[in-house]
Length: 389
Image (cartoon, rainbow, N blue to C red; front, side):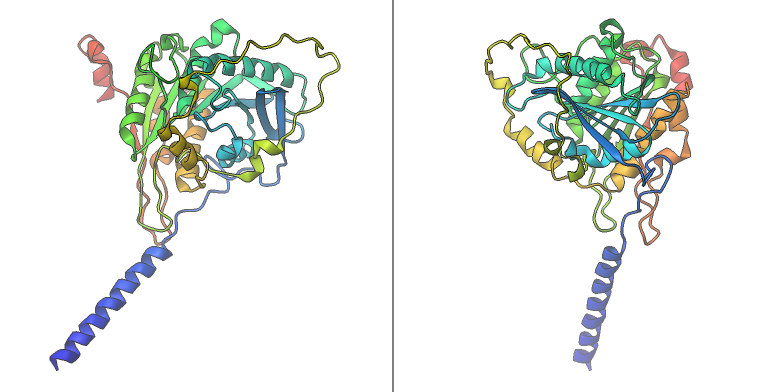
């Protein structure tokens, strides 16, 4: 009798265990919305892919074919991570932006193992200026330079901040929004590796700055994100936002918010398949030769950087993308172009909501925080502290 009872108990336990596995496997992540922030957008759009510039000094341009709105297309300048120079690594996000009506510029500001991080912002600035000039006569592209946003991933976030700080004095369009996704790669001192930040107090006070990180590998991204927010001191706190995406393994495949999470590979955006157009007839024939190449150790990717690049280059699109990073950027851009601020973005109920797994269980919501005043300013700014409470 006891043996039968034991067998029955074991059988019941196995059934419950298997049922739990089936339940977990059956819970799939929420699908991408058809429309709206983070949504698919215009499914019928044909994506135009152009490679602007010559030699290694090139910028990828992506936009939908056909006549744009009368005001033109809003422009997003997408600054890649260090070592991630092929736009296919961000193809999912780029495709989303194009189908939402954006003109996407991806300046290739790095030759892997040949570019110094300290030179990257200047190279990116030159490429963006050249690309805007090249597209000025393209009736289908039609960039609207009154609506410009910057997206930067990893070291690209630091480059984005430098471009924004230098925009007005260097003849670049002043961005309405800077979106720094899992920022990193910032030099900690004059002799350290990484992107050297310029004086970020020059970032226009009307800019909205959103930094967004994941809950995996958090320390470096957290420190970088908060440093960017802090050093852009002319931008008031109500125009800054810190957002954290949370990993969730309730279902399958699990959602893991790592440094590579903002990437999402789409081979349709393989840069190697995008060819340069014919050289303009009026292009100068005798161009000055570049200075002799001199290699230095800071040009080479470290082992840690190579590992991260490998992770970025295999990242898949999931709900952390379209309900996390993409949706947050879409909502922030809409607020920035409408003259609103980060408080309005934070108070939008759609921002934190990550929807539900297929079994009805809610996906972990985004964590959203308005940055606190710098310690030196706290004593002298009780009104700002009161507003935050």
